[in-house]
Amino acid sequence: MFDFWIILTACIIAINSSLLGSFLVLRKMSLIGDALSHSVLPGIVIAFLISGEINSFWMLIGASGFGIFAILIIDWLNRFGGFGKDSSIGIVYTLLFAIGIILITSIAKNSDIDVDCVLFGDINTVPLLPKIFTIPVPTFNLLIIAVIVTLTILFGLKGFKISTFDKSHAQTLGVSITFWNYLLLGLSSISTVFSFDSVGAIMVIGLIVIPPSFANIITRKLSRFLIISVSFGVVSCIIGHCIAIYLDIPTVPTIGFLMGLILILTLVFQTFKKNFQQRTKAKIIKQ
Amino acid sequence: MIKKVENPILEVRDLTVTYDSKPALCDANFGIPQGSMVGLVGPNGAGKSTLLKALMELIPKSSGNVKFFNENLESVRKKIAYVPQKESVDWDFPATVFDIVEMGRYGSKSLFKRLTKNDKEIAREALTKVKMLDFADRHISELSGGQQQRVFIARALAQKADVYLMDEPFAGVDVASEKTIVNVLVQLQNEGKTIFVVHHNLQSAAEYFDWMILINKNIVASGPIKDVFTPELLQKTYDGNLTTLEQIGQTIQKQQFPIRES
Image (cartoon, rainbow over all chains, first blue to last red; front, top):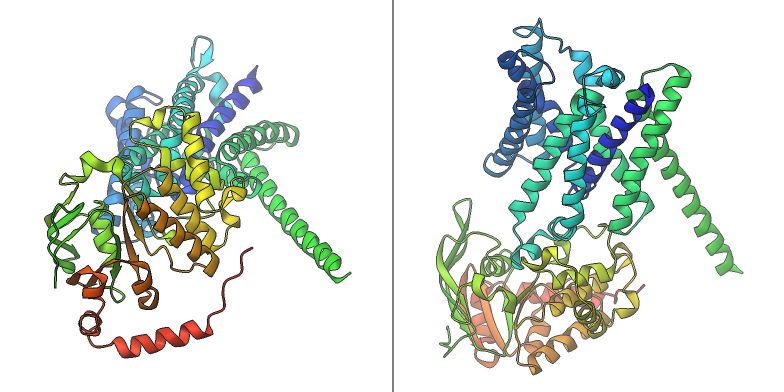
């Protein structure tokens, strides 16, 4: 049962992140996930200072607030500051993450938040946490978000699709680009915040970027892209945790390593396959 | 020379667009008669695409107003189709040719509904018109430049609009695709539709269009092709650089090989 909760939690995070990540990657905005996962830190610390407890409702409000705040400043820097999108993201998340770290190591010294936990998460403690309807609190929260995210993507598929592929065409049809953009970023922000304390800042980005990138080299159809992306995330989490138990190493980095490894091996394999096909084609033409 | 038009299908008044407080388009005033095939011609950076985007409200205008069918864009959106430059999107996006053309059937209200059989039939018809039906299940990254452009035109056709605004539909397009596209445009015009095309090739401009707008930050001329396509007005539009420009154009054309269809 203990491992079941860990795997389940990881899998739900994988579903949320890879679904939202698919559109972030297709919009070339995957670094937004990076920005979000780091920018929420000051929100978490400030909420802790005010409410005095970890894992509280306030903490989530604080973190989501900072997530959305970060997105707004990035947008502002990008539009009015004349900075590129990548630079804007870099500026904002460094600034906010630095504030978070300074707060943790000074004012919030006595809190249970520590820098390691922020970076790598603490998924192995999930089964020990208080439960709602016999489900550990973080898993329960993530489950609700998973339902919201999946339904939004399912019903909003056309909106996300058209606003991602061709913004100006969508606009001329009367589709609100701002609405779909902020819906995607808002959901990503909430999902990131809830995933944050289980898998840490680094893996949140991993789960947003790697599964869609894998799908990108495997398939060329959007519906399949989403399914492959989610399956890749989920399977990696299950196998990753099993390997972690077997080798007695931490779960989260194992999942990250596994995903990266499979991605690169697939890419290498595909390149070889292409070369081979081209060579056989050339041979046939010669004959 | 701006020719006055009675009951114009598109009317532009005092339209000014600025980028970073530099004017990209100044005080444009013109009207377009219904059923015409309009070429928007001018040198690079003359504000051709800017004008088109401002008409579609994709960029904010500093002043002036635009009326389609004597109404604001918002209330007649469905009657107007826009074809952006094909370079403006990522052709590696996971979608098939049919997926893209289908998007012409999307609307702000129908985004949450399923597409009907009729919608799919319209998309298929549009693909047939641009001779791309055989490619319906192809992934869009496997297309040549000309084929990409034809897919974009098909998407606009699927919108079943009355006015078509196209940004450089002949740029980077092979000869066969150009012919197909011209045929489609002629057919549209025969159906009474109005077509507004940003164009950069002066040689073919005289052949394709019956109405022409010359632009270089200002509208230099707007009217029937026989009145507008004159050496004096062209010289004025190209700031007297026309001869060199034309020479360069001709040399390039001579050296160019037709792009092969894959």
